Length: 292
Image (cartoon, rainbow, N blue to C red; front, side, top):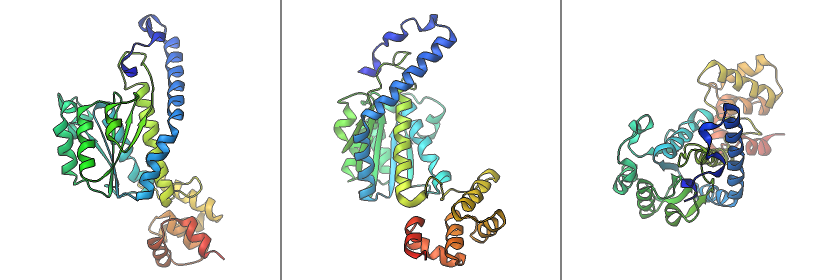
């Protein structure tokens, strides 16, 4: 496997000075970007399938670094896009304890992967994406095999060609990141590519589901002062009103950016704006239909 091979550029890694190691790591990160670019058609196929099937849940599953990256991406969707807590889910072999501590043997268990899928009651309305740098992690294989039996859409992210999980998944993504500067340490370049692909999956899905207007995250959850100010700034920029009007609309809209924008642009009350959003969550489509 490419991820297990020795990197010729780093054979004397321990003898390099700090600056040289930084340069080498930056060069390797640039190669990681190219590897993701080479796999963009497969990434597009997976995302398109999720959108066309309008799946209810996207479930990431992995062990170690791969599992933690899936949990990270899923956990950032509610504050960024105001998604439901179960809309994006991260599963890791060994469960929550494995986020901080290695759980011996968890990643080697096919049955544990199948059990975790069954505990989530995975079905045809779901998409399950297995993540494994090697592409052969037994836990991830168990997850994908059980997900397929349950009728779910399946995808995979691995860092080697012709990997085991690719053979199971409906929509495999194989990013050939190559040897790491520390042999086999796939928390490095392979992990970088996995995070990039996961970011693409969750971000593009939420953009296409109306969670973004222009490049504004108009469905953010304003849970602190910084995010409240960001929300008010968005309202001001989108509607071209002053700060006083933006704050007033924001408060009347129960601090919901989309509602406030519709109130100001369409000159309607909050209740009417909420009704429009209940039928159509994409404010661009609402504005194109109702403005003027």
